Picture 1 (cartoon, rainbow, N blue to C red):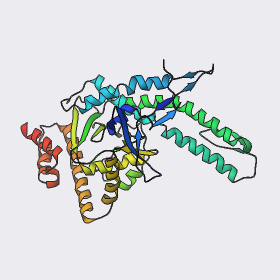
Picture 2 (picture 1 turned 135 degrees about the vertical axis):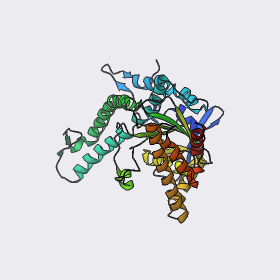
Picture 3 (picture 1 turned 90 degrees about the vertical axis):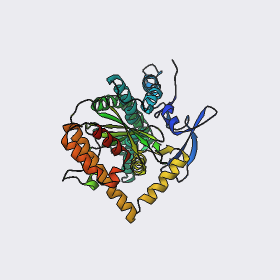
Picture 4 (picture 1 turned 90 degrees about the horizontal axis):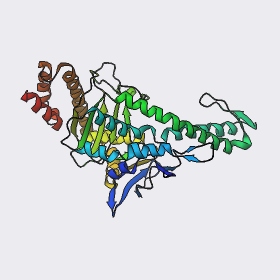
Length: 373
């Protein structure tokens, strides 16, 4: 069995969907948080770390079981899952396919080293800060329930040992967390969003977006507080989004009635939706946003121009919120009352009287379906 030392935490089979091919090689563009420069990279050389998943053994050998698990059970399956998701003729899925889609998509959340690096950087800052503020040669550090004693002359060695300790714990814990996350989302609806204008999705070195569920119709809803809220990834009401390529996003959304649906929903979206998803993708990235050169450039420019409070932008936001609220109410009615109900027909008629809703491509599909019943 192979012993891969250079290990992708975001698989090349995923990155290639945002890349350009040249003589059988794939190249992607990227921009770091700390740089204004957009660079061109081989997908072989991005989202990769040496021995991230390698497990040391007592006999001095190295165990590559985790890397082989991802390579064989997830990364090799991704192209098949991607092809199925992209097929417009696929409208229903069985439970086996549902499991395959969810396990493949959610693998990209806990396997990235972002959370491990946050932990390591916090420990390193804590220990160095402690010695900067004392003349003592030994201090006690409080870290994750432990209180190790650290000698000033051993700081670098202690940091190195702690990073390796954290990495081994990460290898064990992230697989358990991954399994728990999959189990929490197995009954959810699965949808595919497709961009119908010239916008593009970007992606990142930490591409899975998890949003807390919110009911915008609730009198207690506070938009500012919502975006400050810390995310519990295992909360069953969370919404999950993963860009699959420049034009496609997979979305996993909980159902109001907790029943499994075999429907595989497909929706069309435009620039305002893309703006919000791309903004979340950039915020969620550890170091890199990735995509086509044009896609990254347009993302930067769109974020700049749409965040200016012009009358036109404010109206766009108001209309978007009104439309999102109406769709949320309609979705709840459909799940609780059924498509043929008088309540659903009344809500559809109301939405059809509002131009910025009635002109929406997804609403037109709903209108056509309801009118045909």
